[in-house]
Length: 625
View 1 (cartoon, helix red, strand yellow):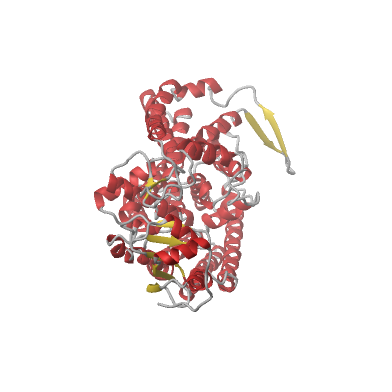
View 2 (tube, helix red, strand yellow):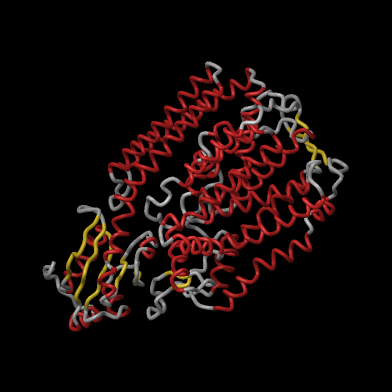
């Protein structure tokens, strides 16, 4: 771990009032989170699921049970499928936004962008009242330019919203437990109520994971009894002090949060929906009830490590944090220094470091790992990083300069590795999932731009132009973001999302005529297609198609439309249709040939249906194409 000898005992130099700079920072944040927010179609997988469910709420008025406009496999006669994996708040906010502003990607994503904006303001505000305005500006800048923050802000998922509630809970609880002298008892009571209300909304956003701040705060309060002393030549010695640094005991600290009233308030907000959806009943696509899916599978099952899809090694989050908080993560070892951590003048840093590591360690010990799981620790990381930059600018010395150079060198090495991956990666992807050349080229350009920024920062740090070096990192990251919002969005829409989403739209006119629509062997699932479909398709992943089709789908005079990938068509469906002499017409072929997606129309007469059910086919050449 890189360690700097900068003294943190004296407060850093505080620059004067600069409202124009703060306004500029706000405008920059609005640019990053809202500019061209709806210019790219919905992403898959999670955003497509959430937005499709929210759209059904707007169209059909069921605000209790999230539903997908897809025929349930176990009950094909039904036109919608309950979706029980997540709590209700993300659907409510997406549906409310689309009801106000229209059924568009921009309206759907607006709640996430607003949540990220509010989280950034919280980061700025807390850093301002604890460390000063310059630290606040630097903290907000590092948070809003973190790649994971930008990704979460620009799609409707639970991550941005959960991070906002998590940050609100942590900061309100801390200010209630460690109140500045300016905070009155009435304000402390208000902060306690904010904590419990945020906890309720957090549970309605992410379920039991939304209560994680209780675990983090418990660790923080327990560690307040711990005195950490560092020997001159390394090593740690731990001593239990006889009392807290502050006059609170654990019980007194807990009482500061008004737990009885707070728990009642939290229960009053979060419990009604849980009761109503349980009472509403219904079964999802796997035949699970809400209790079986949401409580047993999503909570107890994940806790027991049954989610094998996302199993990853223990150190995975070090890599995820390096990329998700890049380039600022390269300076984290110094920013998160535990030097004199138990000294009174570092009480704010101690709280932030406990926040960071409690979340990091907890999710590292879990078997299932995704980059977004640790998003709630990013505000703490940003405040610590902004504080460290602020101290270094106020009291520059050789140790600070050395640490900056090492961080810039680490950033350069990281971007060089990413550039190599972007250059060689397209040659190793599966044949049935090629990367379009324009997207591969853009990935190389973005990583090269990042690499140039790291190199410029390194040169600036060697010349002791510290502010200029940080500016170089921020500017190149901004250029990358703007390039991604323009060229990147265009390429993603053209080569990734548009082909299959446009086919979902193309099928609308046949659906009006009563022709059933089948989404066949689409792996992984593309639920965003449901948002663009004014019908309820039948979804079938397994091979082959015809035996399932003739038993499950009520054909309209033998006609049925099928949307599938070119790879599935060429290697599976076409030979199957040839075997049974089923006439087929290619209505649309988007994104190819070769590759891409197809909208097919099959005509299966009664005599053919009988042969399919009996398994009697022919090897004759396909006709009717």
